[in-house]
Image (cartoon, rainbow, N blue to C red; front, side, top):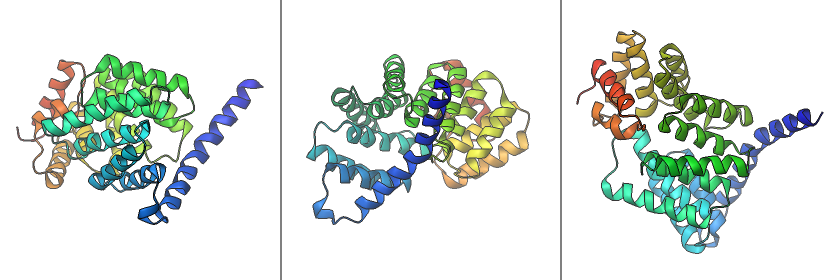
Length: 285
C-alpha cells in the first residue's frame, strides 16, 4: 500500500510540476521589467531558454544573481546557458566562455549546496565543460538523494553518468526522469542522452531509434550527431551521410574533431570512436 501511495505521489508530481513552472513563467512575463525581483528575473530567463534565446536568458539570470547573490539556481542556469550554446551548435566555446561557465557553476555549488536543482544543473556543467567527472557525479547523486522526485536531478544524473562511462546507469536515469515527468520538454534531450549511452554500449540500433525521437522534435548538432555515430556503426551508412549533410546545412562550422568537446566522455576510446564514425559519414575534419 505504501509503495502504491509513493507511486501515485510521484506520478502526480511529475504531471503537475511542469505546468506549475509554466504558469509561474507566464506570471513573470506579465510584470513590468522595472518591477522584476530576483525570482521574476530567473523565470524570465527560464522562459528564454525554452526558446533558445540564450544570450538574453543569461542576462536575466545575471540580474537575478546581482539582486540575490545567494540564489544558487540563477548561477546554475547562467552557467547552463553556455553549456546549451555549445551543445546546440556542436562548436566548442571560446576559452573565455568555458571559464565563465565553470566559474558560475562553482558559484552555484557554493551558495546552493543544499538545493537539488542547483546541484543537478551545476554538476552537469562542471562535468560537460569543466571535465570535473568525479565532482559532477557526486553532485548529481546528492541531487537525487535530496529530491528523488525532481526530474531535472535524474536528467542531469543521466548525462553525467554517460560522460563518466556508466552508460547503463545513464539509461536508467533517463528512463526514471521520463517516468517522473512524461510531459517535460527535457525528455527530448533525455532521448538524445540515451542514444549516446546506447552507442557506448554498442547497441547501435537502439541508439538510432532513440536519436530519431529527438530529431523529430529538434534537429541540432547534438541530436543529429548522436544519430550519425549510431547509424554508421549499425551499417546505415547512407542514412548517416544524409544526417551529416543535414547537420552541415544547419551548422557549417561543425567538424568531426569537435566531438572531443561537444560530445565529451571520460573515455578517450569512446571519443575517438565517435570522431571516426562522424568522419565515415562524411563530416569534415
